[in-house]
Image 1 (cartoon, rainbow, N blue to C red):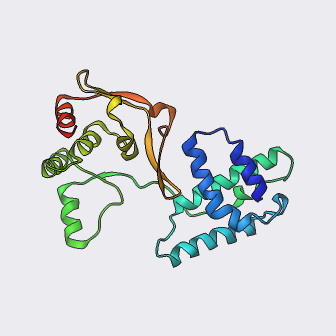
Image 2: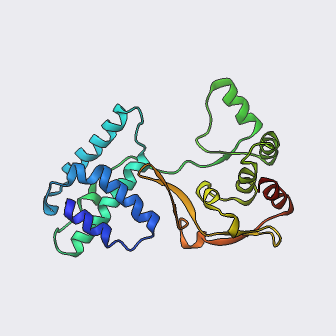
Image 3: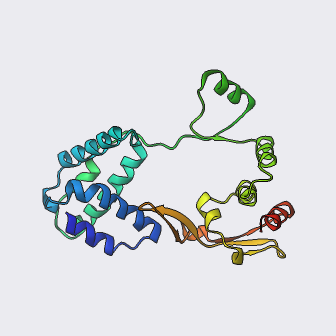
Length: 221
């Protein structure tokens, strides 16, 4: 399995960020827990024990693994075993038979005054809450003197991902024309920050900068 996983990574046609995610799964989980098996030996039982071990190890470190992470790990393995299926090395893909908890993404809700009051009273809050316009303005006014104010302003008003904002360089910003070219992002890989292409081809784009954003960027520059 260790050899097959390495071969699949070397031949993966996906974007660099996708391959990096797969490589992380292979290095941290799949090779240590399955690498000594023959491809044809891998069974549902092996995969269930692997996932249980991953969950236990995370619990021991005080960082419980999420259902979404387990689904992504299984997806990496399933892709490798699908390649083995096409190559005639196995007759069925055991990763497709493993049952995992639901990993539905939580639905975002607006961080209304009522929800804020409930959070202050009970400590309970939605998994994903979106600020109102007033809350966003209050936040930006509160950090106006912060050295990264221009970055927060850009994220809040133009919808950049955190990695896209971190990867934006001045040479990709034209304040006179009021535009910025989003063509790279910064991600943490293997404990190090790395510049790479945006998440998807459609993520590479030119965005318009409004007057207040241009002003904020000029002050920040």
